[in-house]
Image 1 (tube, rainbow, N blue to C red):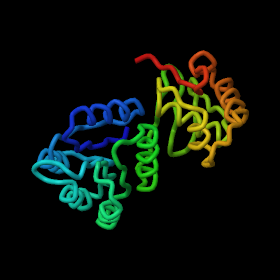
Image 2: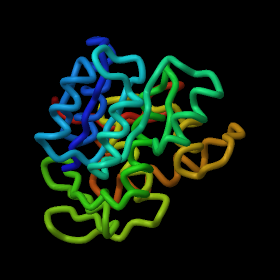
Image 3: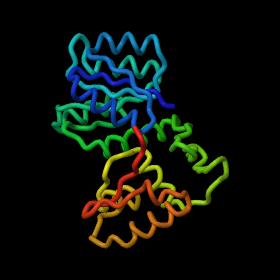
Image 4: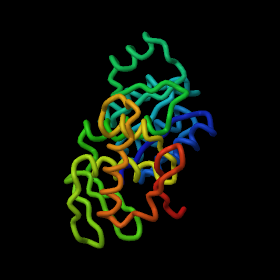
Length: 220
């Protein structure tokens, strides 16, 4: 399980991040100021740091230097959205830069991309009671037996597991999995989802949401 440091001084935003990331099977540790974040970085290993720039006691740019020395990749998460701020953050060594307000689905996608790019995605996700996803080998097992999924079916499963109990719109599903602009034809999404949930026995858990899309229901 990947471990992520959240350095954010606004408790409401930190709790939102923590809920979304832990729902996607990440382990999270929160620091409310830069000094506390630096202490955590010195004491514990992390796979990724989400850093607000405007932190008390030590700002995000200072924390970035801590992270670089420890080889911890950084995503800046900040309200400072001007182009020069984004360029500065990336030039200093951040892997990505997300401007508030943000969509949780986009955040999770960027976290996964950075972890994969930095070689830190070797983990097994579970969908209780019987499904496991090895993100390094792209092998999916049900009751310990491998299930043959197409590349798109695998990407769909991963998307839903990372967004459990969240209703996902068809257009966002298409754009995330197919990487193209959604043009209003839902047949491609519906067909792939029907095949994937039949293979994995998810007919009663991966449900259609009227006039929206689909939601993977998991007991909290």
